[in-house]
Length: 582
Ligand code: ASP
Image 1: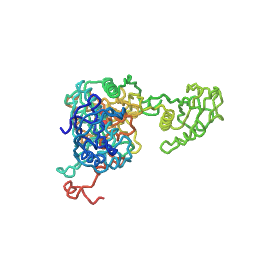
Image 2: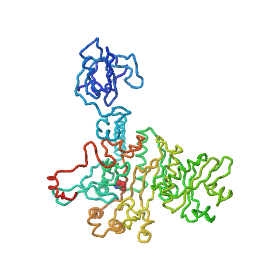
Image 3: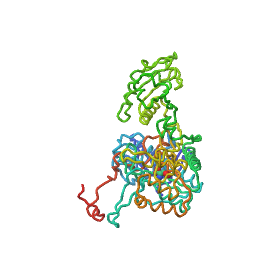
Image 4: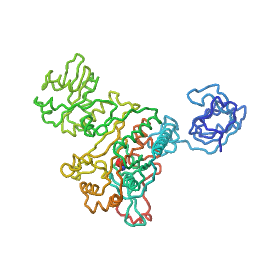
């Protein structure tokens, strides 16, 4: 080895030892008679000292070192007179007796430091330099530790890690597939997996019983903020289980991660029906770090000639505790916020519960103090509270109030990154109406089992059929989701029929799975967690990009390797892809 130890290992105990270190030049200071070099590697930073009186040539070489030069330096560990107690090696330095430049470096385009002067684009173009920085590398270390923890937990429970193919056939799961042309089968394409869904189910038919994989998945979606075209799932499947078993097993996984990685004892994860989540939070992924549940007011407010409320399907509000001091200006800001096109509400109604117990509303013309006291009872409001109310069509107004609730949560400091609140959301609808195509889509995916007691509704009220499907939500972010699967050919065929597949289409696309169900498919179910998202939450980051070593930018580009890129005509010809379409 070129070194005897790392740049993070030496301390006062090592005084007098002869050592050799390798690393990158972080910083150098030339004080005339003495030159100090900070040498950095993955493990830390150590100060090297060169003394003109001891060795002039060596000192002169040291002066030529530029930032990020790679060097090998040997010497003796000595106590520092000027100690830096902020770093583990800060009490010592190395008196250098030999120095070798292993490789020079151009001046890096941005500071390799915890706080860098590099903008996003530059950092991504030179991501390998960005990854030298502690915060970025620490995210990768965290990710590694989480992956190991996941493997240990699942391995101990007899899960087998199986790799499934990356060149597959399209599985419709809502998003567009990335496709890969096949040279050997002209005119035909593979698809990259959106998830290993069908393969993990086939592994259950094969009797693997418990499967997992930390696996890349690919979705060709229009890039919304913080989506990556390729991302990683912790993908899992189990046989001979019921929903309850999946919930317990994977709640265990998440709690183990919190314990091992963050030292946090996550309490038992509460459960909520999808319908309740929508009613109380207007979202299937409520942020439960704070309460502020919706209160529906239809019964109290109708019949008072206030047109906005009279015409609304739903009048619903939230109690922003302690916000009665909000000024006119702040309320105007909130009104602006909900009127933005992304949210699209028409107006905000509010009341202040004053310190003296009186109530002042924006609709005093229509509701007297007695009426308003009834509202106060419904909201359980106390002096000092601010109540915000929206009205409109049910689904829309719930969505809008969800946004307002999150905004108020943020404004009132209720969404601390270091507080964690997990939730299971259960009993999702099986189907979702899609306006654009004018038909039902599978809300989770077409392999999800309807609740047996709801199957009869498939013909009459398809939208009311509930699925054995569940999501895990942490701090308002969906971190995982799964379902109990259909394992019976007839039911699977019925499902495809309801999703608008002809018999032939269903057979062509999923015949392999339905055929497999005829050879002794066990009851089974599973779940997949978004590993990048989980890592970013654990790291306290807003973006998943920061926990991915080589991420793509918001246009789906890797600016470092410059991909996607064109390919030459010869390649196109071999793939039988026409070039005149551009
Ligand atoms: N394959 C599903 C997904 O990617 C997860 C599951 O049902 O296990 O969302």
